[in-house]
Length: 308
Image 1 (cartoon, rainbow, N blue to C red):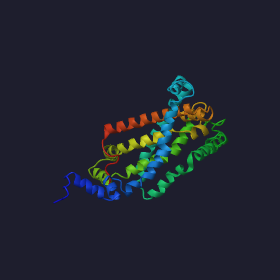
Image 2 (cartoon, rainbow, N blue to C red; image 1 turned 45 degrees about the vertical axis):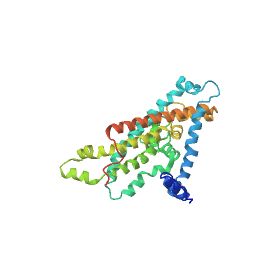
Image 3 (tube, one colour; image 1 turned 180 degrees about the vertical axis):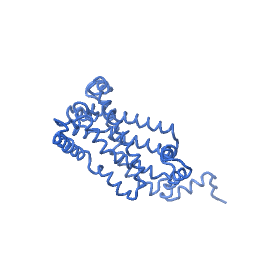
Image 4 (spheres, one colour; image 1 turned 90 degrees about the horizontal axis):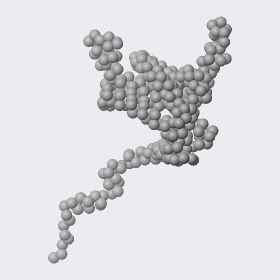
């Protein structure tokens, strides 16, 4: 009597899995329809961000003359080039600190107001203007023939126009105006996520406003403020239009982005421009990692706590 030999115990589940439809097998591996919806976004990121970065990294090690590190050796051998890192940091760091320091009290006040949406809309309007329009506005108000200098001259407060633009402070004001709304929105999202009952309970127990801020609000805000500082710094560090329009691109505000632009479009040395861009990314990465490490010393957990 002929009979089929029984399948081994380990082979039976495999046979059932092979007989299952392809959709079921993919779902078992975590590749369902919802997951596949992320595929276009992944391809988009790879095409527009990952590939250009990797190609720029390769290009930075392929100079027209010299070895693989010739571009980096050239950059750090010329003060006219490597000084741009310090110039950019001297702009980005103070701007970041000022924006965050101003955004925290404004966000704490706005969250308690009745017309919060209207005030938020007014404060974020500069985002819609763009860097170029902000620079044109500064030239109109603070330029040599702007309204401020005209008023000072007409009222006899100054005998000649005061130079408020085309220097360090012109770029500083432009970065503060264009960067504050972004910083404010980030801080407001963290502030409104804190449970109001925590502060109310402290007030009932007799804690004053300063004590409530120092003991309750600030510790809960520290994780979010670290993220805000990192993102605001990255935004300010990549300054380019403001440094050209209301700064001194050949002097006090010759930031590292200008050096990369000149290497690419004036000297047509794309390899050197890629090396400068890689150095920009490295400096930003170091600052962001340092901020996140400092955040880790204070708090370990999610970026927002005390949510209502």
